[in-house]
Amino acid sequence: MNRKGLYFLIALALGGVGAVHAQDNAAAPASDTSATPSFDGRWYIAPTVGGYYNDTNRNTNSRQFYYGLGVGKFISENVSIDLFVDRTKRNIDNAVGGGKWANNNYGVDARYYFGQWTAWRPYIVGGVMGSYHRNPADNGWAPAAELGAGLSKTITDSTDFRVEAKYRYDWDDKSQPAKNGYGDWVLGFSIVSRFGEPAAAPAPVAAAPAPAAPDCSKTAVNGVNLCDNKCPNLPEGTIVGPDGCPQKVVIDLRGVNFKFDRPKKGETDISKALAEPTSDSIAILDQAVDTLQRYPQVHVTVAGYTDGVGKAAYNQSLSERRAKIVYDYLTAHGIAASRLEGPIGHGMNDPIGDNKTDAGRAQNRRTELQVQQ
Image (cartoon, rainbow, N blue to C red; front, side, top):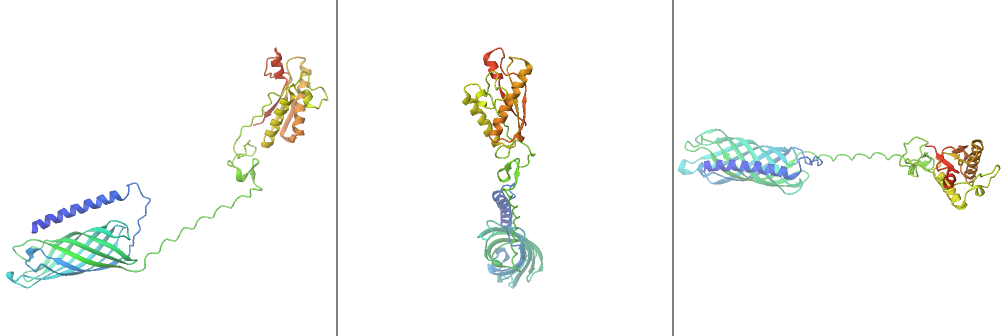
């Protein structure tokens, strides 16, 4: 019985270590540090009563009343440590002389709990102790150890109930000269009572005040209302779109071409100077007006050009008249003169078509709106 009990104790200890390891692995991935354990770390007392079932090698009555007291605390959500003292007293069989045999045990237990704090929580328990023996043959100390399992439930903020069964091995080799070591079973019931008030819940962190909303009616960057501006940190003067972000603006006046040698000096009606079909050219000019109105920060240079026919001095004057008549069209349709550079003429310089063909010369009789980036 003694040797079998010792083997059983060792096997139970190894099984408990494996169970704890498996629970730790299953609880959360090693990299998961987002969860913060919640537990009550107050000190508690745990009076215990129950039954003590003796090793038959003790030559005593098989079972008797058992009582004790523990003092401990949780050191984490799943682990508690108890310092304890307990006592048993048994009658020695008359066949071996009779009398009383008492044990006072002083030790420490560690418990590992599974599951949530407020649920029914199974646990494993293990401990070591010193056992003081008092009997007719000998008084003295011997080491002892125990291992077992139990079930715990939180009843109130300050009270738990727990029941547990433990196997306790006592290395007493003095009480009976012919015996060495005893394996007993213990069944105990405890009411765990914590001291003091429960820890107060941490005060909620006050939310930072929301920044004051900008006055969208008065605040603008690059001409775009701040509440609509997705790129408010651009330098002033940057060409931006309706969302306030950089926008490349292209104003294309290709198709706005002039009749040969028009406009004449003093001519102000642009429709008479434009190449046929005049309506197409006017539509292109109106699109340019619309673009400039949508991008009020855009500035352009109004430049006129001629074909290669004629003298350079005459063509210079003609290109300036072409730039001027487009300039006047833009200002007449609401474009501020402060946004227009010129008008300037480039004569027959910078042709875009072949001056040796009618089609090429028609392309060169033009005005351009050159966007200032």
